[in-house]
Image (tube, rainbow, N blue to C red):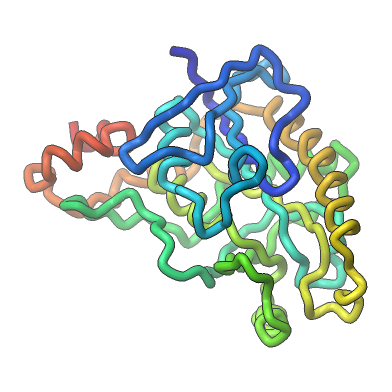
Length: 287
C-alpha cells in the first residue's frame, strides 16, 4: 500500500490542487468513524503527499460536524509526519488585510464540546501544547509564502470559535482587546490531535475579510468574499507546493516525541482494546 509522509488539509475554497499528479483516491476507515472524504494520494514537486478536503466534497460539513479524530488518524495510518493545513480566516487587525497570509504561532479556544483527544477509555496521556505549531514546519511555510510573492505575517494568535455563525460585534471587539490576530473555526482540534499523533502541524491562514469590528465590514459582499477565497486558493497552492519541496527534514522538534513522557497510565493497566485501537499512535510506547 502506497503511503505519504506529507499531509495537506484544504480548507474553504481549497478543495483540490491542480499540480497533484499520479493521483490515487484512498478511502480510509478509522476506529473513530470516517474522515471528511477520501484522501488523495499524489505526487507534488517530487514528493508523495496525502490531500484531504476538510469540509468534504461540495463543502458539506460544518466546522462543528468535522470528524477531526478520523481525519488526523487517517493521516497517521497513511504514514504522514507533516501536515500543512490551509484555513480561511477573518482578520482582527488593520494590517492583516484580505488576501494576506498568516502563519500563526498560538491558539485561543472558544469552541464548545468538540472532541479533541484520542485518549480515554482506560488510557490517559497529557501532551505539551504550550507551543501548538511545529517550530520547524511553520518557518518553512512562511518562507514558501514569501517565495510565492505573497504578503505573509509570521506569528500571531488564531482564536478558534465554534460557529457556524460569525462573531458578534462585542465578541470581535473583545478578541481585539485581548490581542488576538485572526479568527477561524477549524484548526485548533486538528493541531491538538496532530500533536497527540506526533505529527508536525502548521497552519496557513488565508485572510478573506476583516471581522465585523472593522468600519467597512458592512460593505463586504458575498461576491467579494468568494473572490478572495478564489484568489487565496490559488496563492495557497503555490505556497504549499513550495513548502512541500523543502520536506522532509530531520524531525528534531517536540512534535516528533510528544508522547515520550505524556502517557500516564501504567502499561499493564491499559485495556487491550484501547491499546489495539490506538496502535498507530501509541504502538511504539505500548507494544
